[in-house]
Image 1 (cartoon, one colour):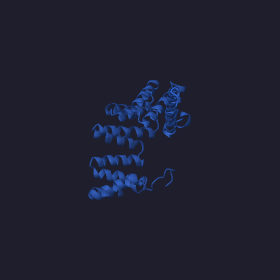
Image 2 (cartoon, one colour):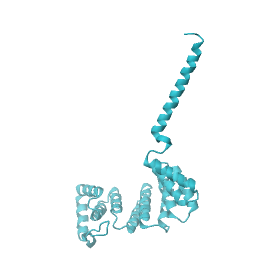
Image 3 (cartoon, rainbow, N blue to C red):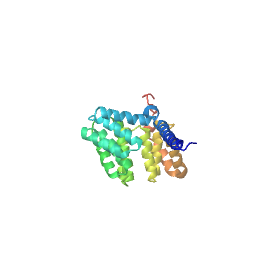
Length: 242
């Protein structure tokens, strides 16, 4: 090979190496985000849509709430907190901003702030019953984490006041009672949950545990349920039919 050709060959090899690296990087990016940089997963699409909505109208508090919820689902608690705070600034009388802020604070480990904001969400007006059920259950979880067991029980009771036939809420209170070794109350609430949704598997499993390990308490709960007129009434389905 001519000595004059050697530097040219080396330069060509260097160019080829750079080209290979660039192509490889592009392929990895395409695998991660899809062609054209578009989000690939449903969550990525939800985050992108929420971000676009905020860019379109930065002063829309509900757009901020939805973006905070998307960030929270993504695991970005700090970003969710910032968006929720913006939502509250824009609509201080809307409880949804405080609710999502409380959820994000809880996820970040700040139970004290989470309890305060979730409690505020639960005591403000303007939402439907389902919202307050969720807010009080979330509040109960944070209170339990903080060691306020009496407050957690009261919050679960409040959630059930908004949905007395909600099997999920009854199961939540039963599971809380089971964690506190209150086997009778656990069996009672699991029984009520199954009255409204007989196929509710986690309630079935919970009741089976209590029956196996604490049969006396389970038997007493079953006896008390059997004498309750509400328990013996035909269950109402989701369509409102019996």
